[in-house]
Amino acid sequence: MTVRRGRDVVSSTAVLGTLLAVFAITEPRSDPLSFAPELVAFGLAVIPPLLGVAIVRSFHRMVQRELDLVLVQSTVSQPRFAVGMLASEELARIDLDAETLLDDVSKGRTALPLNAAKSTTASSLATQLRLHLIQGRRETWLYHAITESEFLGPSVSLNDPAGLAGLLDPAQRDALLRTIWLLISDTQRPEASVALSLGPIRPTNGLIDRQKLRFPIELATTGVPRRRVDPETWQAIRVVGPHIASSRGGSLHVEIECSIDNPADA
Image 1 (cartoon, rainbow, N blue to C red):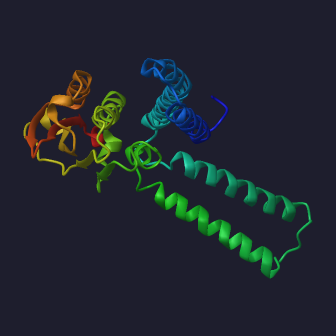
Image 2: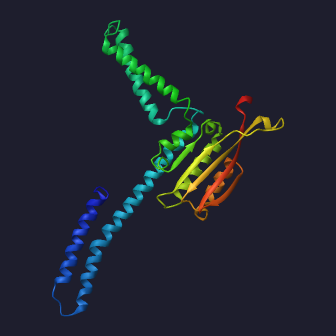
Image 3: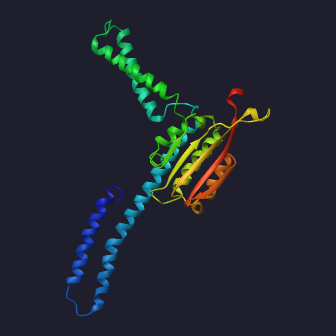
């Protein structure tokens, strides 16, 4: 069952169950109680395979979700602005192509000036490299964590025009990511979603306050009732900062007051 597709097992079980049901119904019998063994045979033939398929699929989803979480957690240690994992693979390919071209030129396998085909290739590599470098100055670790996750990508939207997520310390980053993850995973509703908004920076007063930057982080959920939120979610939110939670239309809305060290004082 673990090497066959679930649909194959289900279809085979359905055919077998249909045949057993037809034989049991059409078989002539004088005693109605003789139908009981047929019913037991039907249950033993149909229920175990279907139960096995359900267990294997649930285990597969659990493993895929945990692997996805491990993958996105690797973005927590990235710089404020950086390229993502997928972009890193693309940069490695571009680097290999550029290195190959330069090696051909240095060893005389490719004559200078470059012909039209080689010139076009070099120009394309340079353009792709510039685009990746520009993207790397706009996209934070949180952007990559969401967009490169098969679990978070369809359900989480991010609004962080100033790139404030990149200023969070490692503990706040990990807690914010766990908060989003738990809010989505705590509900079985397929329409559950989280809209995440960071900023703008709020003014501060006093010498000590000027050493800190304060900005709000708003979590607006859809299809996530407050009563279904796990206590671990609230613990993670408290790591990010003080918060105010409210219910709007049966869904949870959280505003976190986030304080970070002012990078200008670093």
